[in-house]
Every structure is written in C-alpha cells, then in structure tokens.
Image (cartoon, rainbow, N blue to C red):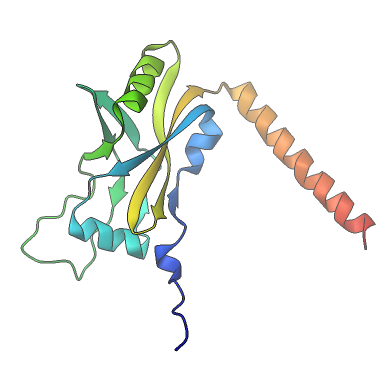
Length: 160
C-alpha cells in the first residue's frame, strides 16, 4: 500500500494579513489557538476567510479576535445561524497574555493578527505586538523592497 499524501488544504497558511505588515513595525510575535465552531472550520478548509480589518481586543485577562470575516458555506447546516464576523476567543498562556497587555498599555503599541494557519489538525492564529508606521516609513520600506528585487534581477542576469 502506498502512503496517502496530505491534502494541500490541511497544510500551510489559510490567510495572511498583508496590510498589517505594510502598516506596522512588528515587534513581537505570538501563536494563539482559536475557539471555532464546526461551520467555521469547514469554511477555513475552503480558505474563505479575510483578516484585513481585524484586530485583537484584550479584556479581563482574555484575548478576542474581532473583525475577522469567515464566509459561511452554502452547504453549511441550515439550523445554525452563521455570523461571519462574530467575536472569537483566542487561546493563550497567562504569561503571553501578560506580555500582550503590558505591551498594549505601552505608548504606541497595538495587537493585530498576522496570519491563520494549520498546525496539524488545529487552527492557529499568529498575532503580533506592533507599532504603527508613519508615511515616510512606508515609503522607505517600499524602496528597500524594490531595491532587493532589482538586486535579484541583476544577479540573475549576470549568472546567465
């Protein structure tokens, strides 16, 4: 018998928040679990999630994911009322929560989700403690990225 290959839907990244990497300097990253319902997991397997305007709310020593949009599937159960933007609880250790709370209370820091991904059969959320970028910082990041691309092109052409 041959070994079964893992399906691509169960491995790797589900969704990225590219806007967060553009708008913020990432200071510290954390991995958190998410409390999900059954229809949400099925939608995540289909990749129907957006993290663009989502953020993390820290309240009463708990963390919540707000604004993440998980689109319900048409084949989902009819007796369940699906709320695509409901508040989802994040599962973190107490030490990690303390670091986040202390960081957010510091001036200029925020907590945002960066990515959703599979870790085995579990869905994990990569969250980060971030500091906002000014417009000139964003322009500088774009210049550096363009310069890196140009260097790669030059190196590639010289090796031909």
